Length: 96
Image (cartoon, rainbow, N blue to C red; front, side):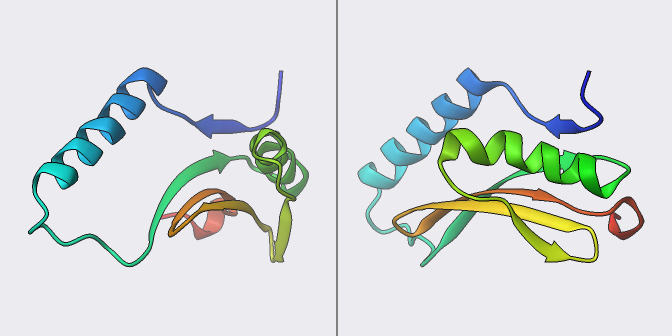
């Protein structure tokens, strides 16, 4: 068992929601879109090594490296045009 928890959701529902958003925006060209957008997956872990491991487990299938941001923060990001898919681990004391 891993020492981290990835806050993941219902994959099918998430993908269906993205498709609904695309359909809505396509059908309603008057609705503005953001210049950039991010989708984030959060990793919970009490220690730095587990946070890094959790981020790495998501980064690997994305084909991107895990970045050590310092002070116990880790992330990985893959961009799809102006949309970023990000995985991030934040130290427990910094979470609100």
